[in-house]
Length: 195
Image (cartoon, rainbow, N blue to C red; front, side, top):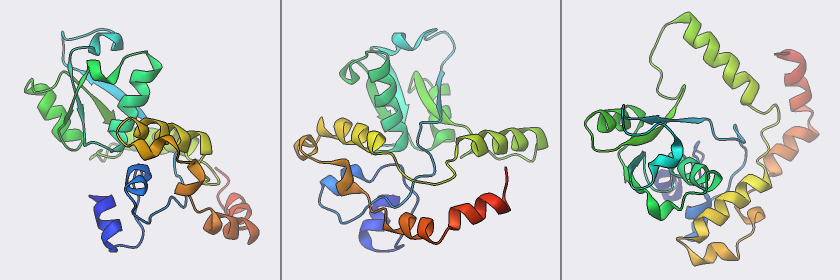
């Protein structure tokens, strides 16, 4: 939905997981910064369905939607453990809580769960843990990595032939970050917020 709103022109900037598919479809959008350069997802499975990730073959795996961050995380995971995505049924079931309900109801066997995105708690320990976790993982300078973008381009190429010749640089515009760098913004923020 964020990509649809962005391509429609309102709002002019959004936080999204993947602009690659929209870019390959011809939409004039680019990545200007990256708040995370790694997947921060965990796999949840219904009790008794599997004990190892390799057992996901032939099972139904919940994602928020095709082209989403959870979809990309699932594809990265499958590649890492040598599972052909064709051997898993990907089921778009919505947000984290909706995926957990779908798993509880038996509509899917496993899913990816985001730690803090759907947290609704006032528990100080949980909030502090989450803050420290993201503090360590969030880059001080939010430059996207070309290797990460290339991974997304490679994954997109399976569905979109134009991805086979696409280059990561066509999906980014680093001019804003470079301007902030030239103005010493990151240095100033590093001094102000030492954590």
